[in-house]
Image (cartoon, rainbow, N blue to C red; front, side, top):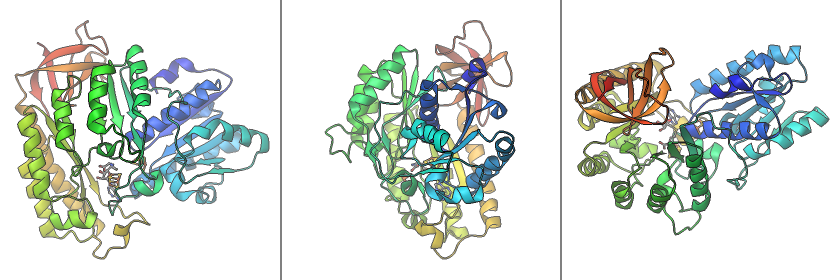
Length: 447
Ligand code: SAH
Ligand code: SF4
Ligand code: F3S
């Protein structure tokens, strides 16, 4: 939202707030792009807005509760200004549909994940008829180049390569609210990346719920490995990342495309979800811990300086103390650079929500705390080994908390902080020697 500050104006303003994953952040940029094209300006102050959009997530119940709380906060503004338009977009909108109007009667528009492109038409309809609008289609083919996204940064950008998911992990709501996989044409992706490079962007993260399936739905001859090779050579982007890779689907062809590339970063985010084979099976993940372990061995042999991160869910139905111990042992033996850890949250409509042996909340929380302690020790230990090494860092800019400190990231996606030097131009590459490693950040100085 940093660009908003300069763009305020007295006429038509919009305020946007986003929850959830990077795909949702990107969708928010598309919503903002449409409003920008129609002459609306971005504001960081909801009090000044003519349109308030909340782009929502429903992956866990905690996210939903927070969002309904936020929606409630805007009721006061709607009462004070009845012409204010309040729109709820994204995954929770797709899931709850008209029920949102019941829970929050001050909401004007509910806009599903397949209707993102229609925002302006819906706003116009609302302005001319003043009736509530529900636009939640089931599966619309998303055209991919017709909305200029209003990017939130100037150095790093998101570029979706596919929408939706076909995996149906038994805990997960995403396939129900995002639909089946739809790959974007490789030419569109390349065109968008070239334009970003011309505008000075240095880093692109390719987005998809399961990027390794790229191209399969379209029967395309370009698979994910081919796509990586092409954009590595032709896009002009300095650093290319991607997420999320499914451990079942990342293959040798992808690994060799990364090995042969110059710009694809050596950071592997491979969500394992659990370290117990019984739980992985119940989750429908499609791999065993042994297969995951041998994949990691292969990756670390090919990319000795790579970083590995993961997602883990604790308290999946049927997770006994013993099975949870298997996860702890697995985490201890794989040694991830970092883990994103979640309490299992039953999502109605998913198979896991009705499985027997649901784990009590208190036990889930205890397990999460234990897991986080184990992971934090490992992260610190791995980072400590980087002390004394000189790393290539993409400069992002002054740190939010301290203007005398500059922040950037390594190719392995670790955050680095160092004292401002006068040469720290955002978007440039700096070489930083690590002097003090912490669990979440590396501190250093120019080499
Ligand atoms: N497509 C990605 C990410 C999906 S959502 C992938 O497959 O990895 C991001 C993470 O949220 C998941 O990796 C999972 O760890 C977590 N998650 C999804 N559903 C959840 C649920 N019902 N409860 C708790 N965590 C969940
Ligand atoms: Fe959800 Fe599994 Fe698809 Fe990821 S791969 S979005 S966890 S169903
Ligand atoms: Fe949430 Fe939807 Fe992303 S449910 S995690 S915003 S795909």
